Image (cartoon, rainbow, N blue to C red; front, side, top):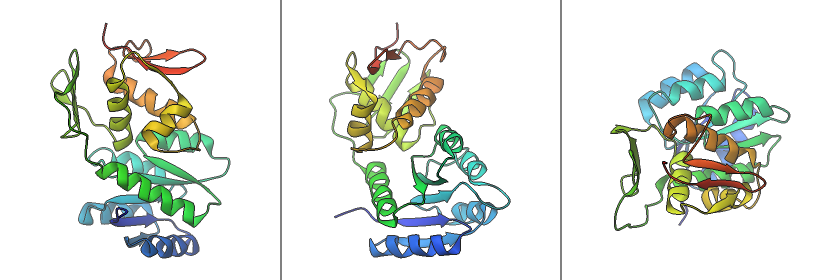
Length: 230
């Protein structure tokens, strides 16, 4: 049975939001709508949704600012809606902590599938492990889905945690971006820059010198490998 939940759709185009609502409700989700950033932030604070579908082009507080404010205190999964040609905004959104994105014009069915995929991964029970994953001061508790560095808990999004867990579990193995999209995101298609952005965000949180990473290293012509602290 596919996961369902409370989803907030934030879009000032009422036609788009109504179509999205109908597709998500067809899949069993409980859907609320907001047409601006202020109302969205207020609703999220009061109702604690399971996922937010967030258009980046909003009146007043835009979607990027909504995402930034959310990530100051919440790890709620976010699926962005971006217009074709807004690659820079899409990358910024991923850097701010969005979990996935769909480019307008989009298929409502594809968006519904992305929502289901993100919810499934956010709720997936971690596989049992004999012990936590440890690399120097970096510790990852798979069961609690918590990572700490120097004793302080890291603010990781669902995707960041999944990517870190996967790489730490396969230390010394190199993976292409395409392989990581498949193994971590569960996508057999998609923009491989998504992986690049998430690796960059992880490095900012776990590397002592992000510009000269020693844990998640780039394997030129291939992709990435987790080497561990040196």
